Image (tube, rainbow, N blue to C red; front, side, top):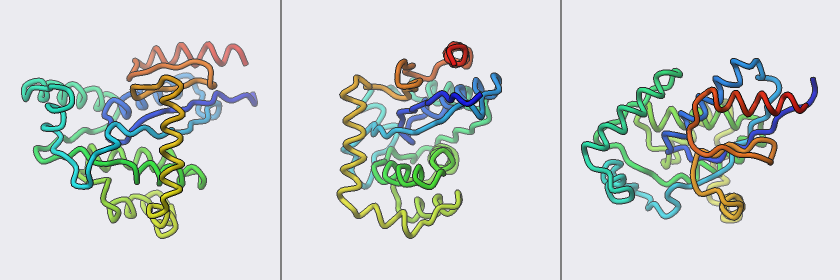
Length: 215
């Protein structure tokens, strides 16, 4: 079979449901044996495009933006951690965890796509932020994560001071928003249908099976 299913995954690397949703999608792909039949491209989405460089305490951020109570935060973190653990992803929330600006991360993910390392870097950044207590807005941290997946860090990091490159990322974000994407994760299948949110494995399997039947 030569036909491939194109999956555009619109997400942010500080979105816990984005990694949960991806792990569900990954499980669906593996259970159907479609590893060689899908092509994944990660698309940028900033949950907090105006986040200052110093970031914001995550608990305070959730209370300010979503009205989350301390009790609600504890429940939400436990729920997310459980769902992550079911598919081998570890969430390790900690008291001083910060929500950070992710524009630089998205610039680097666009570069990683050009060298066929995009998914590797995306997953590395998810782990760095949610599991390893790392500030992924810090350029030294980003450089180390680039090296970890085999990307030339010097060349990639140099793009972060190029205003036109940042504008290209923002233009991509605007494109998806103009198409009506307002929540993440959103998975677009063959540029024709979409699922928004972290759906169960079976939901992704159903869509993928239907698409494969059309090939």
